[in-house]
Image (tube, rainbow, N blue to C red; front, side, top):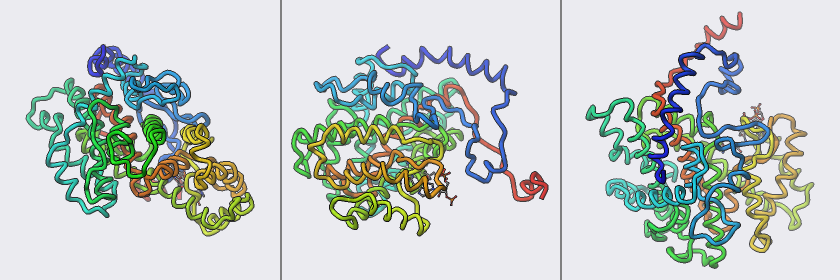
Length: 457
Ligand code: AMX
């Protein structure tokens, strides 16, 4: 089948059967023990969420339907219009892989890309109006959450449910419809937010129904040479590289298994049968926290500040001293550490490789040079410091500074770009939640007296 819905329809009977068998025969199988430490420690190590598309290995990093980033780069289809073998795969290909567990053919990927481009061409007029009237200095993530939440008015799932027209077996089709609509709407929403911030709402580029999702995001940020006003006078090569950076970034930030704040929030809100727009606007609010998606912005601020204090050759000793001062004042090193991962984040490595593959472009960028140097020096300092369980760079160490290089300098805005990509994993899960008919999430909580009783205190 060439379209996603039909492909899913083919997969569903077997997958449902599998789930039914597990439910009927294995519901009593123990997964692990829950400790008091995990109850008061952010549920660390507590394996209790079912998540279909990705899984995070503490040593190897993320796997998308079992494939690591390099494998995805080798097998996922690229933009059919691209002639360059170094171009990155389309995030749309990744969405197909997440949803179906199968690598799409070029035709399947380009059909999905066209479907998203078609669906994304028109936002509901009330959403556009709301977005155009938001204060430019409102936090960009609040703007994004408002835009997404407003689209709940157009949710096909919510409407049918309210009319009492949906049987449980039909939930997934309408959820898929909404999920694709939501993902498709992100380029325009992102463009509206960015132009609200930087150009008094004047559009910075055009939406092109014949181009892919990442191209349209880049165009609406004013970062292409063909369809936009090219605010930063990018050369054709730079604009092409930026679109590829966008494809790379969007393709590998889609999901990081189910327990991270944005994914878990989407899943939790969705478990109450909230439609995709309600669910993901909540996830976006989770992504906005400084310990999660906002870290990309913190890293850029941090690199710029540090750069301004270092001598021109950036000696290791000065960088280490700077980090010690930070740690001694009880602050964290932004872009380092992770709740689960215990090695350098392969997403960081992929972003770094993007810069390394373009030495001429980045050779005079001190921020990018510092980002790279820091990735060698900070782990040594953090290991000596001895607290951080993972002293290595995480995903946010590199992404923001690369966008900054090409001219996206509004730091608070970076998380919106993250939010575009992250839609794909949680939306996939929501569709499968409906296919399997998973129930509302409702863990049991413990009060202090119960904790004390358990601890014999
Ligand atoms: N710098 C300094 N100290 C750090 C640190 C860092 N980068 N990362 C962790 N620590 C400290 C913690 O603050 C904690 O100290 P405490 O015992 O005094 O409270 C101790 O090390 C143990 O923490 P941990 O178990 O290693 O990490 P965690 O699971 O509690 O938190 C994370 C993970 C990412 C929030 C944390 O490493 C951090 O704050 N990093 C900096 C912010 C950042 O880069 N966030 C982006 C994460 C990726 C994402 O979601 N986008």
